[in-house]
Length: 450
Image 1 (cartoon, one colour):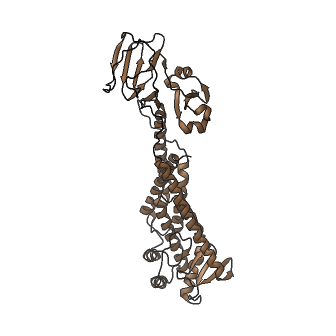
Image 2 (cartoon, one colour; image 1 turned 135 degrees about the vertical axis):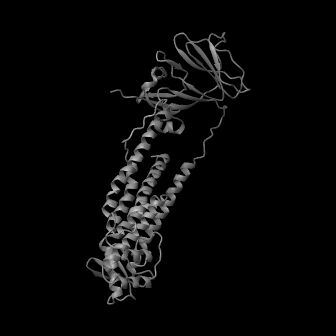
């Protein structure tokens, strides 16, 4: 998997997260079905990772006159040089930079978890019903992590204040809220460039607090719990894996405590998630079909470097109509060559300039096309009853993974070709070895006719 493929995957993941979060903000946020919202947000993050991996083909976009029935070679005349010039690998640099940031965030998260267990080892522990009750004097206590409840010693368990906080933190432990946060933070540490997943994690933490508040206060003594929240202070801890009682926004917690359990159009809001998912998948499937259609055309435009060769063919009188592409002033006209009798040919002609070979003659049975330019695009597709014979570059050819000669390549009809892969430089050597890939490799895949 190269950097281009990963970039496409990340963009699709961001798109999916945007759709799911957008629906949550419009239809589900600040509604009373907290358990549903919790699992919706978790599945949204999981879906943003899994849906882009599938290759859906639900919708086909057919465009007329797509030029897939002709082979095009892009002949580029370049000055002869003794050194190779390569483009600066910006995409690779961004890719490795993203990996570095991900490793930093994962390390930072692991250090926070390590600090929690360090604190546990230094504190007094009381075992009670599968829960480790840990006494501490930390400022932001009480908080919970997995089955560990870190309790502030200054809070009395005998008072109503302490009982409600204990019930609140016990709910976090019983409903495994810490696992939700670990899941989200690992994903956000790896795919930190997705801003919507960070917002999903923030909303999920708020949902956890709403659930714990409801369990702690029930339908009674809401006013007392409101006073408890107003007297409390809270802090925010970046990438903290713990659940602190004072973490969530007090205003939203107060609103949700006083919000009725019944929500207008509640069942419909939940059911609309299914068509929303189908829409998201459908949009990706349409874009994927368009990408495939372009991929059929794109590999058929292959850049080929022409090398300077002596002109061994003698000049003859022009024997057919000549159509000339506008030429640079550095080139001089050359006489047209006699058209071939048995087959059509495409041959490079010698340039008058010392450093460029940019004159290409394409001979047909009834006409001669003389092209002179620094960059010429030739359509080598002949008529239905003719086969073009071209002077192809000194590369190795494969037809359907079988070694082929240039004559076998020329005999292929354009409508038989499904796609063409051009391998050059180090990529060709890595894939085919130094012996075969030294001068490049061109793979041709034909269509399977049922």
